[in-house]
Length: 287
Ligand code: SF4
Image 1 (cartoon, rainbow, N blue to C red):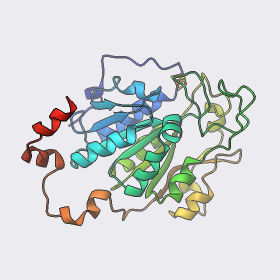
Image 2 (cartoon, rainbow, N blue to C red):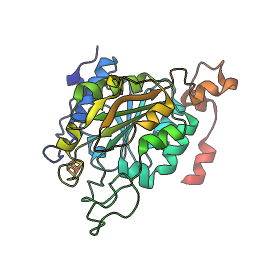
Image 3 (cartoon, rainbow, N blue to C red):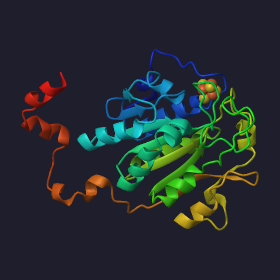
């Protein structure tokens, strides 16, 4: 039986005081323990950014790759070893700037990967540049006169691409965050968990207090229904409120590997099958 202490790393976090990364770090470990996974039962894939600094602060199998490329890494690991739960973790900058195309195709393909975005509306590690989720007009270090581009709504994007699991959490509600991550891990297919995260150092427009005063659980809405169009209609972050929870889930989702009918009789993973082939000659080309 896995315990929280199994995930302890001797390397302590270096995030700024008050950073939302602490809550996501804690929620992820709690969700994994609640799902019965020990550090050797899962694979965590990290992107570059303050979020990626979690890679050695949690004792588990982890992979940290190039900026914006965490989804292909995670998808590859999943496709090679279908029995291994894979969780990809990135920021809003890496996901919706450098890695946008991977987000689009992962949703289309519906790989069975849980994708967590630390959405703090800025590039924190490189000192407060704007990302696609930064508010229009907001002054940032890369836009001293204010951001001129329209703000991207990742929830609308995911829903319009046909994502079968779309959730939004908030680092000020740890209990809900754990439940969302558990649900995302259990979902069969690509699960997107967008986490509104406080960055006290560079985000002074959508801060912890602003969010705390506006977040609500979608299931408390009298007209709530688990419906793609309904989720789309309440997905804006606005003065009037910020919906959190599982915004939409298709519980009959069929993942990429499930759709490969010609592999339905296979009991093995690609990682086993590749051993049946002699690849040393091919590898010589890369030496
Ligand atoms: Fe957190 Fe922002 Fe500091 Fe990065 S820069 S560690 S996101 S508070």
